[in-house]
Amino acid sequence: MNTVDEFVTLVCDEVGLLVTAEDLDSGLDQVAGWDSVHLLTLMVALERSTGRPLSMPDLLEAPTLGHVYQLAVRP
Image 1 (cartoon, rainbow, N blue to C red):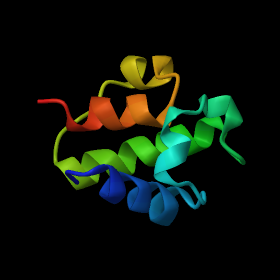
Image 2: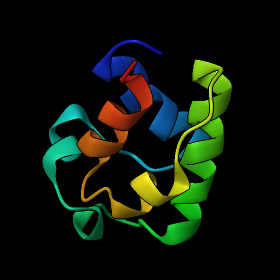
Image 3: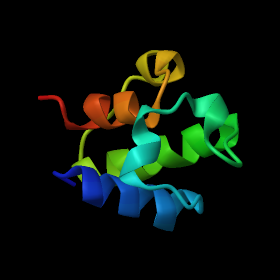
Image 4: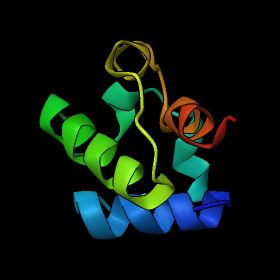
């Protein structure tokens, strides 16, 4: 996963939420249907997709899906 579009597709396919690139800047509490279980599901999908672990504390502090994306793609 290297692009925002791939991230959005992963969220839609793995988490089951219909989001768009425009939703990445919205607060997680503004994403329709979002809950904490989705964060765990997304974390596992991102780790599988990127092949590396992500920090749960960092993900818990992420205010937006865009921030989650940045955590997933940072070197």
